[in-house]
Length: 373
Ligand SMILES: [Cu+2]
Image 1: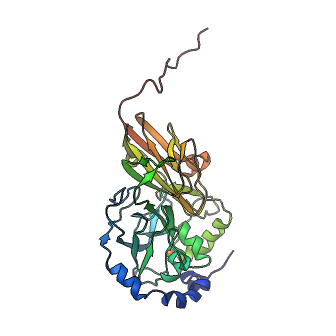
Image 2: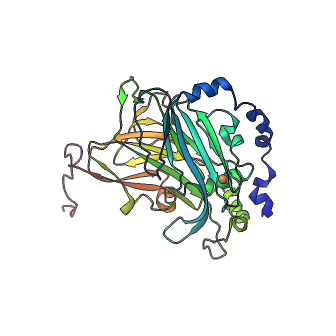
Image 3: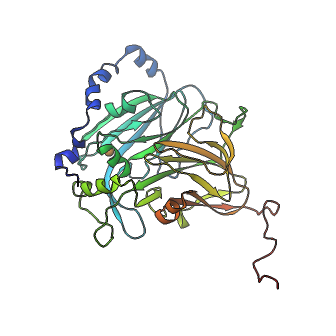
């Protein structure tokens, strides 16, 4: 069993290495007067982040030029129930949700993040934006101790869907990610999404589904263990992580977080953009009873979307987007089509769709009954 002392637990095992070494370089690059003057002329807007599966208010087609979009993330170190059996995880999260909130901007905009690590926390944290450029995605500039905050600005030069995650160094990188510290950014083209022929593609709503793998230790009886603190839990959790076999694979932080009363909703004729992230493992989104009309599987909005897909693939460490216009009412299941992960481990959501049934698309020609002799 890997043994970690308290200091190693709290300071990423002393393995920050490359990040710490970068600091002088990036400090020298933050103060260009010309850049500052240009940025001072840009409008600033605050984006009120919301808990997934919802997306913040945003325009699909940008009005006006580039903006500086101010967002705030607060690191939560808190226990969370992750299934209906009362399994409690020593979780880590951005803004208290797993995944963290979706941010939305347009290509050419700037995201200006204030990252707060309250003094009630005990660990150091940072953030790596896959959408950004330089300094380990910002990880090298954002390490904050309990009681500290940092402000990072980055320019969105790539249009697409991208994950962000905590990456404080060494073994703490996977530990913080599988404890819940990940989320996504959607960078839209300024003129909005397009199909393969360049025609506009618009959506009526966005649902952000963050898929999360958890690794909860069990006792000799096979029951899930609970621990007072991360320091107590970490060695056992790292042992389970090493098996690469998650105990839970969930959407929105908990088994059943998006089913039953918490199901996603839509109406016949509505176009829904599903943004799906998985910061650590591969996933295979599939909408039972529907399709991916337009799928940006790797998340790049520069590439033309694939059309009419059955099941698509989200590479671990990425976010993708799929748009579907619902054509029939009823309950749809949006899941990872590794059916063991979906049904036994929790990786599924429901979409309840209102509207009129289309007999042309499907009809029960004969109800179940005895086979005629
Ligand atoms: Cu962290």
